[in-house]
Image (tube, helix red, strand yellow):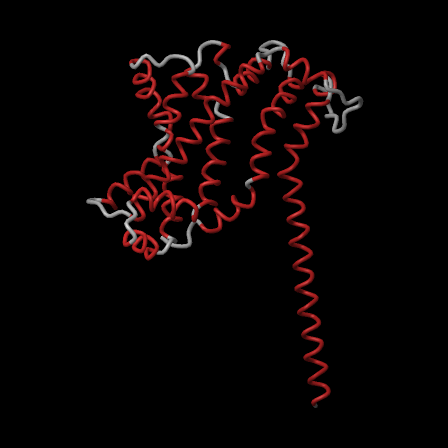
Length: 293
């Protein structure tokens, strides 16, 4: 009986291990398949940047360029004021990212660590703005900026810094991180004579570095790829950003998809580089968002 029981137990364990191994193999295959699905648009962008006009319009589609070349990059860059539009994009993105990180971290710190009247109500109002479509506030913002004389590129640069903190999701994200920090650290700093700003800058900010990097990364990607607001506010080609340059390259009568894809690859590269650099902190930030409510 003992030998037969041991044999049955061994067989059961072997089957369990086999099932576990089969499940792992299936999960790996599924992950690989999903990776291919999500990576295919990026490959199609790379493919489109190096094919000629005939190949990009060919049906059935050409999956591999016959004679890859860099003519699409040269022709696309010649059709726009690339350096000027690059500078316009950078001059808007930098103040936007800085303003977003500063204002949302101030608000997140206040909602998490400070005690003031109706704190819960104000936080609820901030979170409720996430339900408000951006198109609803477009007309009041446009009227406000034009009445203040902010026309052209300044209409995006100035509010980009001072009004960047209106993103309620970033406020919520940083508040969650601030709430994971023990209150004893603030109390000890107060005993040593530190004020609120010193506690915020010297103690809190270094501890939430992953969340700050996530906010900066998302802010950069959102602002760098912004097209709708730039189309509304920017009136001259000299003030256009790179996404607007892509719109120019794509002709109305004769579409230049290959040149658009070449420039889209150029425009997308900074986002990919920054994401790869901050990927570690991005994953850590998402994982730690809801640790403490």
